[in-house]
Image: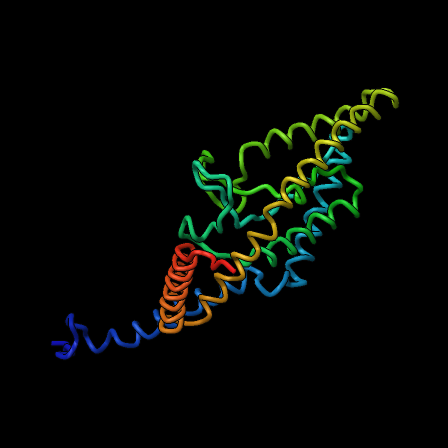
Length: 247
């Protein structure tokens, strides 16, 4: 009869210990590789070479078998900002929904490298709305996520796609008018996006700063903030009750 470990919460055969150690090692390895293959440290050259080779074969196939097909690069991006329902100010996505966390600047830099390669190598048209500051939203059909943008993004995307098509159909004079209207809309969108950029970045920086304090220091900081706010209200109330002295 196999001996069991009496000290365990559940009976475990001693022959199962090596298997448990092996399973734990495999879980740890899978956990490490999951983060390694997410490319948090940059795209490995081997992966980029494989991707570029596959893209080159795709471009060759389109040129040979679909010569009238126009390839359009969609320059997507990740956003970690969300507009809650009924509000107009964006908040960090992670403060609204818990889920997988990624390094958005790093992920966007990697994505940009792939897009730039496709555009510069093959001269394809592109739709690039990254500087218009689109966020994610709670009422997206698939829920808020890094690449689930506010619904007005998709209308802008279709407008840009129509513009690409019109460039091959309109005469130069009419095309200049259409592109002027499109440029004005783009400029307005960029200005609108910039009004929240500094505020949101400051909020994110503050969150990272507080997370780095640890539980005890963060608690002390929060209590100190409350005390300082209470003292400020008391001083304001006292000052408002005072009457100015007459000379």
